[in-house]
Length: 166
Image (cartoon, rainbow, N blue to C red; front, side, top):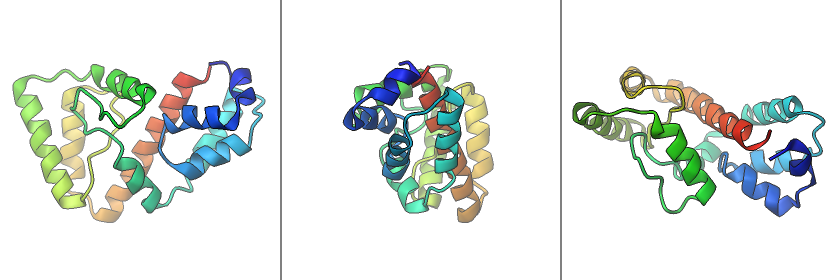
């Protein structure tokens, strides 16, 4: 979608576009209220600045709507657009049976330790790179991991926004 079109959408339509990027209502509302944007760069800068204000409670709610890494099918509760994003982002992850099992076990260990799914920007990463990051992050403290999750969720949201608004 062109930026000009996004700027002119009804708020309800713009909300659907932005929610497909990330389920954080304050982020969505702020970006809608700041329209119109004079450039894509201005939109992305506003999106990045708003992401820096996310509270852990908002992030936690957004995580509950994300598919696990390695799940080839996104949850049915996601919108069609979110399912498409998830499938494209994880499509490049090549997994043989050993890697698939290691990701599955790593996800279980991670969820047990931190109480939420492992989140990583999958786009542009191989399955082995994701597994290495998962293993590295398992030694994080809760505070360190919350910082990493915030960064990864922000990267995912901005990546999706960049795909959606041309």
